[in-house]
Amino acid sequence: MLTFYQMVGQRILERLNELGWTQLKLAEQLNLSKQVMNKIIRGEKNTTILEIREIATTLNVPLEQLLAPVEEAKYPVEEKEEEFAPIFMGRVTSDAGKNGMERATNVIKMLLEYEDTYKTNKELRNEIVNFKGIQKVRDFSPQS
Image (cartoon, rainbow, N blue to C red; front, top):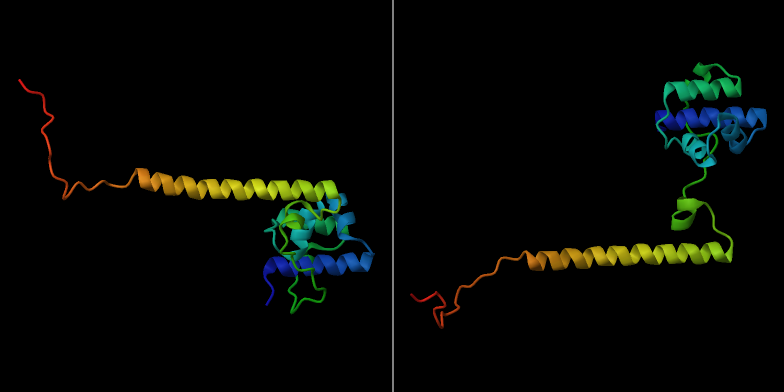
């Protein structure tokens, strides 16, 4: 069963198809990024009633039409890609972009490794020292 936001997204897609519009065109009309528009369509953004009303006005449909229940998804929405780079900043196609993403990924890995090492060292520093079983060899207290 679809969530409320997924149903709204389906209704928006339905209207976009009727108008022959793309998600990008709607995003531009609303002054939104294509990423935000895509989240709205997929039902991943908790949109407010004011945002939905603005979308309805832009699509020239009554607000109620976008809020109407949907039994099942008529227009399948693309699944998210599991790859790090496209989710982070869109598809990287240039060699320079790929190299940059690889360097950024390496930096993130190094930071995570450092964090793990730091935690381990901190735990060692904070470990309680147990002197049980150590014999006193000499008294180092000041002599009067």
